[in-house]
Amino acid sequence: MPNPKLDIRETVARFPEQVESRPGRPAFNLFSPQEVALRENQLRLVQAELDLGPRIPAHYLLYGSGAPETREQSRIGGLPYRPRDLEWPKDSDGRPKEFVCQIDFSDSRFLLPELPGQIMLLFVAEEGIGGTPFTLEWYPHGLRDLVNSRELPQSNFTYPIVRGTPVFCCLYETYDFPEASSRIRGTRFEKWNSFGTPCAGKIGGFNNSIPPGNQHILTLESIRFLVAEPYPFVRRRGWNPSSVLDRLFWRLAGTVCRATGVRNRCYDILMIGDLGRIHVFEDASGQFQVTDESY
Image (cartoon, rainbow, N blue to C red; front, side, top):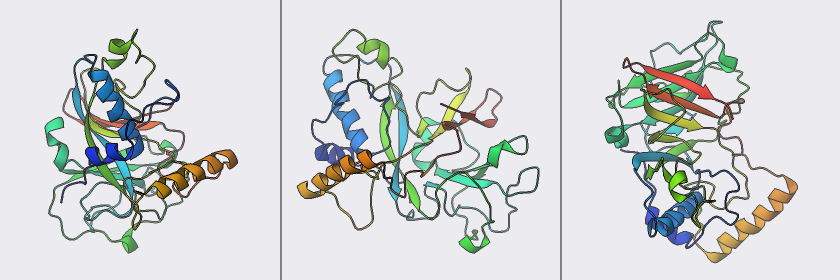
């Protein structure tokens, strides 16, 4: 079963005509359906008047609360799609590395070069212990004898990656516009930040952080959610925020929580130490590499 896709038309209908209330502040993030609607609304307005230049297909990763429907589907933390008899990756001191994420690229093959497998697992050693802190593993669909939750190694990781909160990934299929900033300069749209390359996790698309001559595969962005944010997740189990009262409640709760500094249990869903983001790319020799970047 492929990764779930965000229904863009339905999402925009829930936030009609919403645009940046304070243009240019803050730097634009793309983590929630509300932010997708904002971006789609602004793209519609700008593209009616301007040409934003070349566009590069990208699949942005939005996050849903709850376990994925299948073991193959993309997720942050949790139970990996991995053979049970395979030794767990370790750092140079023999300590197990942390499982960060699993990405199923089946829906995104046309964006990418040929990959070693359909499903990628990413592991990292705390504080970069062991020379090469990152480990990539690649697997095909169809594996049956998989590791279970009782067989996962115990670790004392200090990174507040997802703990006991299942999180799956949902795809927002769109485009990056690398020349957008220069194209809107001098127009009434120049302070809007929702074009170009938003701050978010994504597959494919444009990435100016990796060395020239390499091909971008994946960016995983550190994210933080305030309980205040309406629709912080793509889907909450058993909760359908479709009524006016639902929306009003979350906006009022947002005002209170921003004032008091209260955070929900998902605030540090993927805060990787002091890292800002992790990039996976194919280098000029055809090898797949991982690098990190701080804000």
